[in-house]
Image (tube, rainbow, N blue to C red; front, side, top):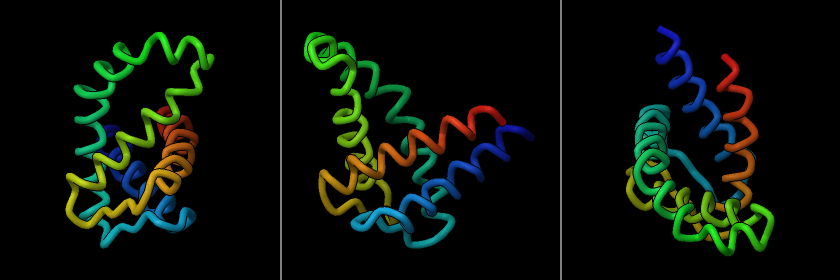
Length: 109
């Protein structure tokens, strides 16, 4: 039950991010739900590999390169998910920041 509530909250967070950040758009709620699944799969399988590969540059930038990785992964999710469009790197960058902040609150549920 809690997993379903979190899934819906994450979908609402994606819709909110699309509303706040120009350059990110979500077609409808079902697209946002699908985007949640795609982002979760990307974070589970692709993100650990990218973080391991970029460990030296992440160390030199004191972790700030993680924001770039999150932006690139959000762009990948926009490319893979029908109904989710991410127009450019900066939209993805600021969208990833907003989603990260919102997901911190959602993870406390």
